Amino acid sequence: MANTRTDGDAAGAPSGDARSAAIRDGLGVGVAVGVSGLAFGAAAVTAGLTVAQACVLSLLAFTGASQFALAGVVGGGGGLVAGSLGAVLLGGRNALYGLRLARTLDVRGWRRPLAAQVVIDETTAVATAQPDKASARAGFYTTAITLYVAWNVTTLVGAVGAGRIGDPDALGLDVLGPAAFLALLWPRLTAGRTEARVALAAAAVALATTPLLPPGVPVMLAAVAALPALLRREKSA
Amino acid sequence: MSVWIAVLATALGCYALKFAGLVAPQSVLDDPRVRRFTELVPVALLTALIAVQAFADGRSLEFDPARVAGLGAAVAALLLRAPFLVVLGVAAATAAGLRLLGV
Image (cartoon, rainbow over all chains, first blue to last red; front, side, top):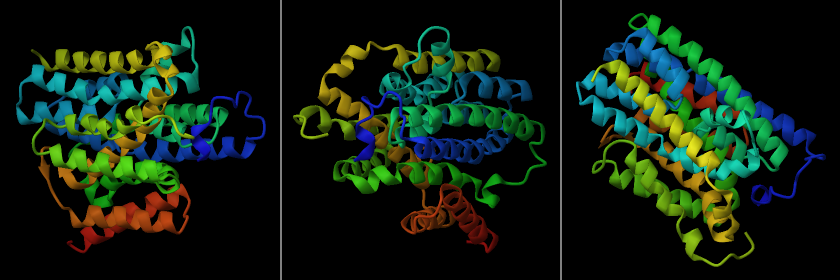
């Protein structure tokens, strides 16, 4: 497996190709997933948030699932305290991503609070799909900047144009998110049997618990699928 | 509680979680088993996310033929080693096309 040994590759000298591939990945994900901001902006305003509230969520919360969750609660007339808690809980996986990415990114000082804001599904997916540290960083920041700009611009457009935009599902936009994650995970899913097993178990856990638990919790819970790695003695990575 | 407070509380909470992961003491990663675990966590969470986005709507499981077909088309494109953007294009076009046909 190429992407399990990243630590020794400090300079990333021989990886010019890997670096441009990472940047391409980042741009692709940033633009493709960024378009979903249209759906969020429209959904938020339809749910009863103001345009400003929708935009502030995209600027400051900047984690799609949590934003959709809060808009859903506002729209459904649910309790705002529970709704906010649920939305924050949905963001819990970003903490696990941060733990995984801290060493790869190795950011210090004033840059660290900025980098923290963009530790999300998409940036983690692109960063962890790269073969070495230098391209992981390039992929992370390319995705981060492209997606942050695209997501916020399209949120505004979607929020202002809510009602005038047709159903984003009609264009198949709802498939872009999962398809992007699938494409990024693909090399890892097909390269290692452990990865494939963890992935299948995670999907099963998430789907089995979806009817039982509040939205967001099943995905967090799926982390248990990675637990066997804690129990087993280190083999050869 | 006004919607504004909910918006700001959500934003603050989400940021705090992102920051916590990044500044957590890296000594926890000294154990190779913990490191292996954090390597696998993104695989587990992202696959779970794909599964939920594909087969669930809120708390109910649902089977949306157009969406599932779109993801199936993505898998086919990946097996054919299509580039990233082609995979996305094929997936969205398949779903959109089927919905246009009333599937």
